[in-house]
Structures are given as structure tokens and as C-alpha cells.
Image (cartoon, rainbow, N blue to C red; front, side, top):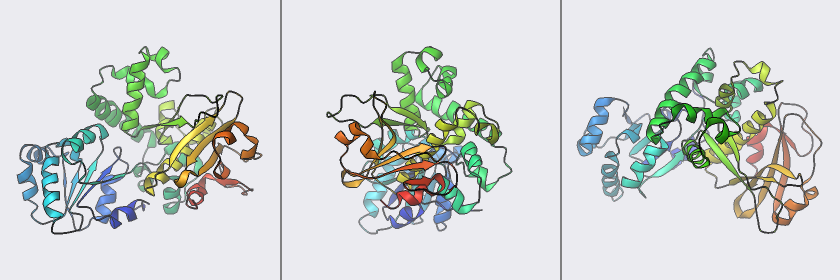
Length: 376
């Protein structure tokens, strides 16, 4: 079964000689490229022999493909390959305008190092993460509580009988404990893992604030977490300065909190924050999938004014979105005086709610959030 990905059309329209698709493991990068690259020869650098050749003799590695188009999976494992790709790209761009190499990379830290050293300015980059709510529902009718609990991992929908608890436990062990920890040179592994499910981070896990900041930065670079900064301007002195921290996928968040089924989550005190995370993830994936240059902030003042998401659109326009688990009375943006001092170009203000109930004015269900964002 194939679940269409919204980013596909952008990849297919792009004709740069080298395309690089980045994202965490198991979000569907290879499957996506295989689906749109049926005339490409494929090789994966998870294979030790292929990796050794690509690293030790990258010229010979590329020469074996001749004039064929090539899909290279997990390219970060052979950093010496990137200067050779640069030379090929410089030669090919003189004689043809088509994509010759498509690469995937699941370790952003290693890919950043490799690209900076060998392929800067010679490639187009695309980010892919787990499935959005929209992508899931367009392919498979799925109850919202199950999406909240499972997240957007493609394998859990292509193979619905998969044990999601076991799948996510294995993911935490293989990707977070091994790939991230080892590539980032983290020695306090146990304490690093506690970072993901503790609120008072520094005090609880026994590390200093700088270390916590470094670890969060690593998880952000690896696209597991995202920081949403406060919207600020000199006109307002009352805003809070702290960023908000979100998981990019609610399935991982639920599993790290210890949930083993969807039902109890719906009546737990964590439902509100998990739904807010789901709304953020939908906005985040919309921006990635549609190649938007939007920026996402939050707004909170010491006097109690709060907006979950202030999205800065093109041309300095702004869209306000609030996440609510139920349909609640709508408070229009003009009743937020501090916000109006600093944000003068609000094009819309809406509540995104959990469920599929009757849609009231200035409200949108999470199932239609992508359609709503598409208007702007």
C-alpha cells in the first residue's frame, strides 16, 4: 500500500542535479524516492561493502553507475563521497538539466558535516517527517484518537496490525539511543534519555543548564523536537521570554510518557498538551511539505494573554491559531491588546479543535487544518 506524500510534487518538479531528502529514520524517505524514481539505480550505504567503496574510492563508486540516475540511501555514512558528487554535479550541469542523484540522510548531524565539506551550493534540500493527519486521512480512514496515540509513522498505517508500542520502543532504542547519542558524542546516555520525559529538566536529571541546552539542540537538529520561540517586539514589555518545546510526532511523545493504548490518553491531564503538540506537528509538516518559508511563534504575556501559534506568513502577514480539545467560545484577536501593539497584520484568527463536530465560525477541526492553511 502506498500513502501519497504531499512533498512528492515538489521533488518531481525540481531538476537540480543533486537532490537530498533529509529526515529521521523510518519517516518514509526511501519509500518516497523509490516511488518517484523507478528509473533510478538504488544503493544503500547501510551495506558495509558499498559504504567502504563510497568512502575509500568515491570516484570508482560513482563510475560503476555510468550515465544512470542513482538513488543513494543513507549517504551520511560516506562523507568522502560528497566532494566527488560535487565534481560530478559541476561537470553535468554544463551538458544536462535533470536530476541525476537523489540522496537520503537520516542523521542531520553527520549530513551537515558532509555537505558543508563537500556539496555546499550544489544540491537542493527537502525535509520529510512523519505523516501528517491530512496525509493519513486522505489514504486511510483512521480514528483521531488512534492518530494522536500512534503518531504519523508510515509503517503503522501501511501495516495496521503492527504493535505500535513495540515499534516505538524499538525506534527509541535504535535511533535515539544509538544514532543520535553516538553521532553527537554523548556519554551520559541514561540522563540524555531522561531529558525526553522530564519537565524540570536540569534539576531532575542532574546536569547543568548548558548541557540541557546542548542536548535539546541536538534533538532539534535531528528533527525529534522543535522549539517555538515567543513572538516579541520592543513595543511590549509584558511578554514571557521562554520558548515552548514540542515533539514533532505525538506517537513518540505518547510512548515516552508511558501510554500503551489510546483510550486512557483521552481522559488524562496530558490530553491538552498532546493535542497542542498534534496541532503544532500539522502546521510544521504543512510548512515542510509545501516548501513554505513561514515561521511559527507563540504569544504569552504575564497578564494572561496567550495564543498558541502566531504564524508569520509571507509579506509579514500573521495567522493566529489556538489548539483546544473541544469547541470553546472564540475570543477575537482585538481582545488581546498587548498582541495588537506588536502584530498589526493579522489576516485570520481561528481555533483548531479535536474532533469532527459541527464547525462554528472561526473554528476548524484538526482533520481540516491542512485545507485551512492552504488558503494562505
